[in-house]
Length: 329
Image 1 (tube, rainbow, N blue to C red):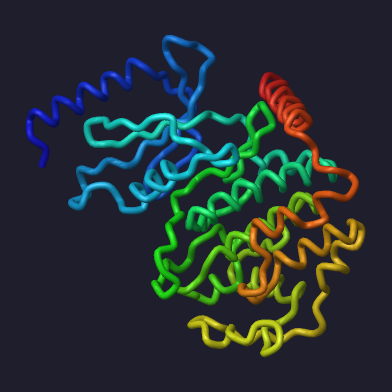
Image 2 (image 1 turned 120 degrees about the horizontal axis):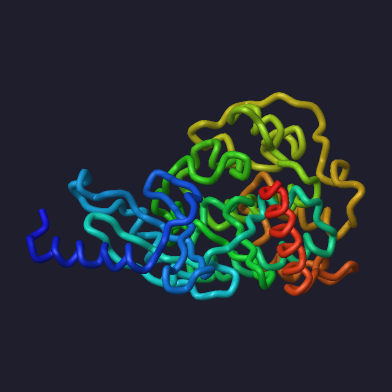
């Protein structure tokens, strides 16, 4: 229902977009839009990530609320370890958001078997960004290695705020089924509608564990299998370790013997590392450590010390060069 004047303005802006950028590669898509790697036409070699939100002509209410929320949240957050919006502009019936293009995704870098110092350096930056997100009253709700970017300067950036939201009040119900399933806290599996920052801490703990093991900690073909793996490691919910679990809508009674425990599964790693994992991967969400508390944990001050950005940048550089060589074969 656009007027002719508005339509002409949008067509003009679309032409400007087509004149400014050349599409290089499709990076991925979701329920609300697609992301492309684009190059500035007048500056070859200068790349950006461009997110195109889906056509609104078939949506009587305009853009999806989550799309607007993502942009609003990112404009509120301004931190080195959080992706930053460079520009936003309209096409005829689409909204474009321009981001820094980052060559390296943590999910791919994990496979290179990072050193203990590098794992600490990356985790330290993730928690720094997460602490800033939480300080601003925002839940990320989809923290996963595929949403952690690392640029050529060795700076880690938390990305993809499509499921994020502000916490307005503790008694307001929230969306169920958030977070990629392998990094999803048990209370979300049980359909909790009241949850807080601790769901992101659980995800961060899963990411740390994955960097250490070079494999997904709680991988399963479905929710029951994932929950079984969680409870096999940490124990079955009971009155002692998670008294509120039975009140959740989809609570299931699991049978099991004594848990494997984090201490036993990660016994080849330093005690400080094990202790941090035990404080992040806690069944009871009220008992999990906060991001700001985790940053002060002895894990980050014992040997080996966390890698600096320059060292992480070298890893990213080597990864990019190796990938290019393989692609050119």
